Image 1 (cartoon, one colour):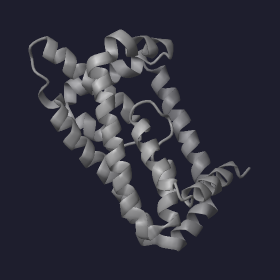
Image 2: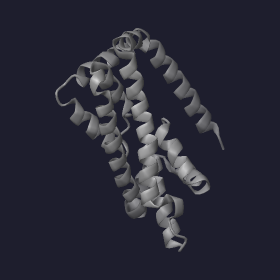
Image 3: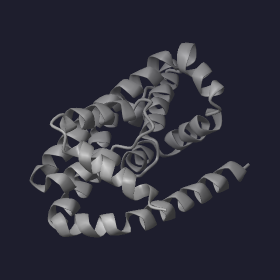
Image 4: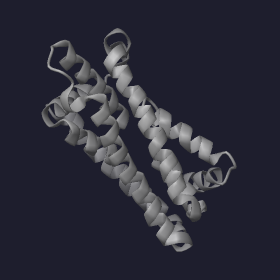
Length: 207
C-alpha cells in the first residue's frame, strides 16, 4: 500500500508552488505554537525540488520557527494559568507538560537544545519554558537559564542545526537522493510509524 508515496508526491508538488516559501514560513511559525505538522514535512521536499535554494529554505524555517517559539514562550509566561491550562486539561496533555516542566527545571537549556533538535514537539518545550520562567520569577528566583534571551539563542542553535543539516544533506545528494527517497518512502514511512507507535505506547504505560 503506497500511502506515503502519495503523500510524498503531494508535498513535492506543493513545494514547487510559487508560494511554497510562504507556506513553509507560516507552517514553521505556527508549528512552534500549536500546529501538529512538523517543519520537515515541507522543508525536505522543497529542498529536493530546488536544491540550489535549500540553505535559503532552511534559514526561513529556522527564523520562523524561533519567532513562533518566542510567541509560545510568551504564552506560557503570561497566559498559561488563565487560558492554556484549561486547554491542556481538555486535551489530556497534563502529564506531557508536567514531564516537560520537570525536565526544564532539572536540565535547563540542555533540554531546550534536545527539544529544538529532536522530533519532540517544540511547542510544548516553548510554552513550558515560559511557564517555568514565570513561576521562578514569581518566587523571586529569577528566570535563570530559562530567561528569554538564552531561550532564543539556544532555539536558534538547535532549530538551525536541525534544518540546515536536512538542507545540506539534500543539497549534496541532489536528484539521486530524491529518486532513492521516493523509492523507499513507503518503507521509511511505515517503519517510522511503527517506531512512533511503540514509543508512544511505552510512554503511555509509564507510571
